[in-house]
Amino acid sequence: MPIPLRQKGECALSAELLLHSSLPPVQRQPFCGVVVALPTVPDIDLALQRFARLPKTILLDSARRDEKLGRYSYLMADPFEWIECSIEQAEQSLTSSLGQPFVEVARAVQKYATATIDELPPFQGGAAGLFSYDLLHAVERVPRHGVDEFQTPALTVGLYDVVLAIDHVQNRAWIISHGWPESDSKARHRRAQERAEQFQAWLAGSAGDT
Image (tube, rainbow, N blue to C red; front, side, top):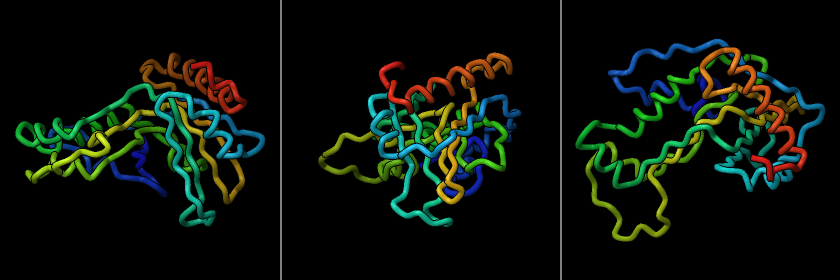
């Protein structure tokens, strides 16, 4: 489930729902990144195959193709930061700070919060990953299952500075690159350009270059 750097539209989960009362209000920074409009819309299945060998690849897609429920697809990989919480850590957070895994994600979203561009698909980079049912152990004390069959973490979230965003209604696609985790605006723009070019190479089939 994605958490956009600015909350808006399809597939969005408001970061404000995750904020702990001790965290300051979100201050979004100006967009210093790079947007590359692709000449054609990539085949999403082929693109996924080319990205599959990269670290932490995520595809957000729908089998439907309609304006309300299947308009956008998002493909991302190689996050610059990874947040993970085991079931045991979720249980421990209950006794120390209620909802601590959510607070950790919220702090990351705040740190890299960035203004978005209205004309582009709503998810333009940010946090995406897995919020499992086992996160309930971070908010209430309940018995655990006797067997953890899949050994899945309670939470795994990557912070993605680059995303391939596809609008199926407009039949258009973009690579949106923010340049995070650089904080200086010039360094961010330079990294954003480099990462956008890297993503274009991956789309062309050069997924071995990480």
